[in-house]
Length: 150
Ligand code: ZN
Image 1 (cartoon, protein in one colour):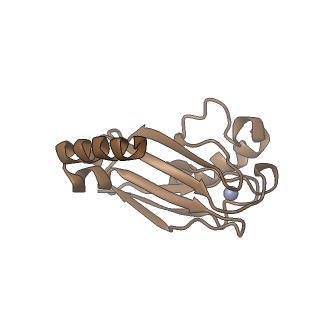
Image 2 (cartoon, rainbow, N blue to C red):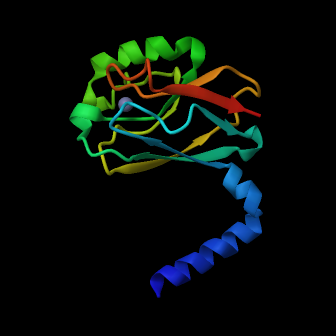
């Protein structure tokens, strides 16, 4: 019964916001035990203002061995963000504390876990060169993709 009520509320909210609009401003991506993201590109409209992103680790390995996060940065800064993140360690989600090159990031999660963040795209440039990546040591080379702002 509770699930039905929640669904009804959600549908009502989606109706107010406009179904297409709501979907366009919510992103989801999976990571697995084979060092893969489920998407090589994510596209979002700057008009969203705020974007909700859910990262799900569909594997089974613990975060100490096969942790994944989702980090957004300018493509030109990606390598440096990753290099500095290694030294920051798992306790800091492999992100250097206070790194202002990081535009948004989730926590590191392990198999079977999921995490959701909301971040602003209001200051991003339409057509800018952005990369999303996993900053777990050794993952960036394979776990990266293009973040497109329209
Ligand atoms: Zn990873």
